[in-house]
Length: 251
Image (cartoon, rainbow, N blue to C red; front, side, top):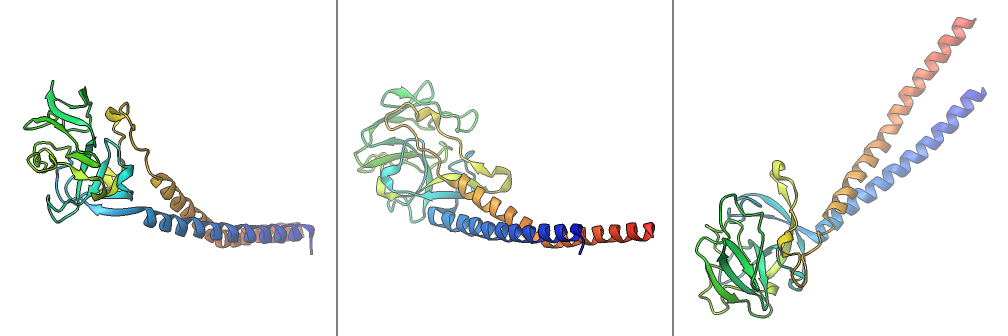
């Protein structure tokens, strides 16, 4: 056996080992990413347009399962409040326990007397369609508004309730991290910087990007490792044919 043949066989065995490792690692990342995502995240279909333009009616979102104590101002949350209806709802938290909410001075929402910039509102609309008298959010509760203020059945509509339109923190089931469908809107929600300077700050994004990265890298490794065998065989046949022609031409 020639030295060239022995070298090719050595490279072939190493390539086979590496392709097997790539496939195995890819499977771990792919399956692990899916399991990780399924544990942390839950998909929801938003039934109304009350969060337009951030989230439209019928959009599919990915929401991280969280405890109500982890909610911060500016979060878009999934919650269920029996006095508001039987279905899960999606709204934005604009106030937490102890906050004084009012609207509108210069067309802007105020929290504890400070105006809040809300770039996520529809163009040309104010922070409230009807105005919100100064309201103190009870301890342990949240004040929530839809981004489409003119048609959202939110805390501003329930101000006459015993808890001034607020909902308990434990009513929150998840925090929306991203829009998954339609594809044209696919992406992470922008951070609500208007609340960043307030006590407690704003929430950090969940690990959704890492989950997606693990799945994508896993797919690439599986496909790349699985493709090595057929590609290596085709290249080997071409090299063998080249050698045969070279030997025939030299004889």
